[in-house]
Image (tube, rainbow, N blue to C red):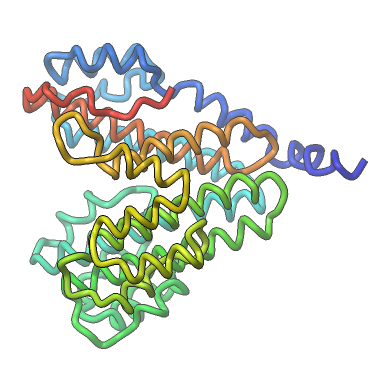
Length: 352
């Protein structure tokens, strides 16, 4: 009887929301939808095609001429409305799980604001560029901070991501290098904390989410290493930025910490079968897919597989990630249409 208890208790609190989410998932664009979108000549055509999908009239009140930035804003807005509806209906521990999903957007917003202020951009111009899933009350006060310590004490101390910032506090001025280090330090702490939370939940949620977060941790480790070549970042400082909750931990991270060039990173990937395939099929030449795109493709496969299991929270994380990819696809196609640059319009990543 005990084997059936998680399923029985899951549906009492979370069954309705999981069913609702699977309904949302059925509205994700299919390959036929993308084939229609890439044939559009103008953004107005794109709007008409999207009207025949689950997006419906989400652009109906937008005046002509339509712009890519307006489409981007409305796509985010639709995702946020769906997410907030789920968040408002749920109970613990799902409510905390959904909050964890928003923390990554908070980190991105903080980095975007700091970078913008560093380049003397006015705060009222930067706030609209922030992702609405990661908004928090203290965002507009961020311009008063000139060091990480001031940023923490004035802005972040009352936010949920304050604990992640403790390793970043210093009196050094905020410059381009420090901001990237802060970004990666925050993400490291966030991923490890989220991974630990999911592991404590146990069951199918732990199984699905620990795999998904391990993939994200490894992706960040690879990208951090590749992006560090030719910069002032030392190998010791680079190693401190690697999240320690992926398949690469500990042996693979030790090897990445010693890597001096892309080929050595590739040699590390060769040890791990699922990463070896990504590096083998990637490149920057004509017709080749970038490593970033290969990682996105792999992520889509992970997220689709999450829906194969019931009675677990991984589907909520997977849905947000799949919608993110769908939004990137639509914006990519919209940019190509707007700029009349159709040569690479098919370089989107299909989901279903």
